[in-house]
Each structure stands twice: as structure tokens, then as C-alpha cells.
Image (tube, rainbow, N blue to C red):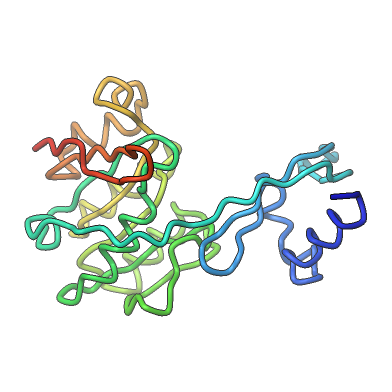
Length: 221
């Protein structure tokens, strides 16, 4: 692919309005319809306000969202307190969340979909899209009266603090995080705090065995 073709594809992914995708580009990706994602690589600069700006695009890494539907155990579909989903890259965490939402009909669920990776017209629940997770959690608690709040890829202290506050206000959570085992989970202080605070009743470890996604282990908290 030559430089012109690459830029044409980039503009297409941005719906020909790059300014509308500035926040995503600053984080190194563009979310595409259907939950697919294009990672953006190139030369970046930081202006006087600390804003990250893409100066020159060198390449993109296109990630196709999985179409697998998980066979989710009954005990998880009927969770009262929620659970934490852990696994490495491409272990099916987001696909698991999407499958759970498609199969869940008895609870009021709000999905904090910061990167617009979970949304599907087949999911009949409330979405908060393109809002930072911590702010989306606070908004969900204030305005949506959820039974369960879902957050994909918890990644910092502020998000964990918002979750802990929402739990204290009566919401249950289903969240995911990058981690291969309990040891790697506990290396993340903000996740350790959520586990120690009994935010979740179970921890699920997902695994990808040559394209076959499985629940490798379920640990009661």
C-alpha cells in the first residue's frame, strides 16, 4: 500500500472528518463500526497544552472484532454481585461481554463503551459511548438506575475509584482487565483494591487456544 492509499484509508476510517476522531487518534486508534479498530502508528508531537497530535501517518494495524458468541454458564448470567473478566490480548474479553449482554434480558444494564467497541444493534441495553469510563460510571449511577454496569478494560485508579463509589451506591459491576493470572492481577493496585473490597463475586480467566475461546478458570472471591 502506498502513502496515498494509506491516507485515503485513514480519511475513510475517520468518515472524512478527522477532527471528530481527534480524541481517539490521540490514544493511538480509530474505532470502526461493528467494534473493529485501527491502531494508528506514525510521528506524533505534543503542543503547549499537552495535546498529542498526529504529524505523519506511517501505518495502521486493523483489528477485526470477533464474531464468536460465548456459551455463558447459567450462574454467570444470573449474577447478583458481578464478576471480573481477566485474560491476555485476544482472549475474547470484549466478545464475552457482548455475548453476556445479548443473552441477558432480566436486568437493567448500562454499558460504559468508551471506545465504541461493544455496541451492537442486537444488544437491547443502555449504552454510554465515547465517554471516559470514570465519568460514564458516575453518569450511569446518577441517571440510569442500573442493576449492572459494564466496563471493558479497567486501566487506572480514577476508573477503579468511580466503580468502588458506585458499588457503595448499590450497583453491581462486570468489568474486564488485561491479566493472565491472580499474580498479575494483584500487580495492579487499583484492581487489587476492587478485589479486596469485594466488588466482584467471581474472577473469570479467559484463554484463547488456537482460536478456541474458553473459560480457563473461575475463582470465587
